[in-house]
Structures are given as structure tokens and as C-alpha cells.
Amino acid sequence: MRKSRLTLSRKKALMGMLFVLPWFLGFAFLFTVPLLQSLQYSFSNLKMGETGLSMNPVGWANYIEVFTVHPTFNRVLYESVINMVINVPLIIFFSLFIATILNQKFRGRSIARAIFFLPVIISTGLISSLDWADFMGQAAQGSSIADSASGTLTALKNFELERILFQMGVPSGLIHYLSDAVNRIYQIISASGVQIIIFLAGLQSISPSLYEASRIEGATAYDNFWKITFPQMTPLILTNTIYSIIDSFLNSPMSGLLNTTSFRLYNFGLSAGMSWVYFLTILVLLGLFTLIISKRVFYYDS
Image (cartoon, rainbow, N blue to C red; front, side):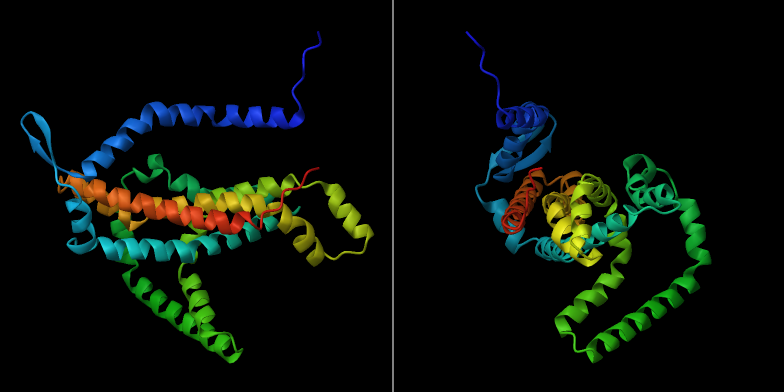
């Protein structure tokens, strides 16, 4: 009897399952128990004693305190969501724009790629754990006047930009968004390193035959971008959006609030309640963005 061979679709499905298997095993054996314990803690009052933690069930008291009693949780959560909504589209647009430029052939291309990836390296735990206090203190003393002048100059530039856009008839909401984007330029560049690499890998995977056929048909560079490049990038736009949302929430002030509540105030029950509210907020926003973007994703079968 001849053995049945796997079809191409089944091989792809099998490779996908093998790819996610390490994550699934790690989640099942390392994260499931702590996740369920944190849910139990959110409905309990934990106190540190001589024999360890004592847990007393309190029902929904921690969640009620989170929304109605805690002085800063609602504000920090709102600011985290607003920052994510503003930053993520800017990060995606900036990353795709820079990746398109870095995909061109020019001198110093490798150095330019390394420069845009430097913020990712600098923000790692190894580099950020170094003690820069003395250096930064001296720099701050020497540049306090320059910082003040720079802030004034930035405000004047933003005002001039808003005036020009207003005279062009741009809606006021878009004007404020663009002005705010200028103020966030450092955050956008710092958070775009990984996304640029992903977009750059996607751009290099596009078949050159598609561009050759379009040039034969007389298509312009503008047509090539919107008819070939952008549709091919839509799966990676979805990937980078999910990554950017998680990265934005991971580095938000909420992380510091959770850390303070847990390990400085030792209010583990309240911190667990905050964590689950934060987790559900992220889950809902991820599902919403994924649902919206996935409807526009184009998958090219070569």
C-alpha cells in the first residue's frame, strides 16, 4: 500500500503548530498557575505575616476600590489608552515610511539601518540598568538654560505649524493630532525599531517580477506603492499593530503603578484587581484593532 503524503496546506498547518508549540508549552506549564492565582488574589485580601501570606476572600471589594476609591487608577488607565491610540498609528506610519526608504539602494544603508535600530538596543535591560546618574546630573546642570530655550522654540514651531495648517483649511481635530505628533517624535522613533525591521523584511520578500510587470504596463512609483507594496504589507501592518499596542501598554505609567501597589505598598489584592482590569482592557482593544485591520489584510499566494 502506498503511504498517503501530506498536502501543501497540511504541511503549512503542521509547521504552524510546531512553531507555536514552544509558546503553548511555556504558557501551560509556567503561566497558567500564576495567572489563576492572580485572579484568586484579586478577590482576596492578602496580608504578610510571620508564616507567609494569609488570604481572606473579600469578593468584589478590590475591583470596587479600583474604580471608586483609588485616586489615580482611572486617570492612569485613561492616559495609557489615549497614548496608545495616538502613538500606534504614528508608529506604524513612520515605520513603514522609514522601512521603504531603507529598502532603497544608497551608500551607508547598513549604517542607517543600525541607527534606527539603536533605540531598541539602548532600551534593553542590560543597557538601561547602567548607572548614568552622575553623567546625567552634570549634563542637566549644564543644559538647563538650553532646555528652557529649546522648549520655548518647540512651542513656537508648533504654533507656527498649527497656524499654517489652519490657513490651509485643515480640520482642527487633525491639526491638534499633527501638532501632538510633532511633540511625540522622540517617543515614535524610540518605539519604531522592531517595526522597521519587520517591514523591511517584508519589503525584501516582495517578488521583483511584480514591479517589473508594472513597469512594463507603464505604472508609476506611486502606483507601485499603493497597488503592490502596500497590499503586500497589510499582513505585517496587522502584526506590527498588535506588537505596538502591547509594547505601548507594557511601557505605560500603569506598569509603574502596579509595581508600586504590589511591592512598595504590599497591597497584593488591589494590585491583582488592577492587573486584571488592565489585562481585560488590553484584550478588548487588541480584539477590536485586530478585527478592524484583519478585514483589510491582503494575502498574496505566489
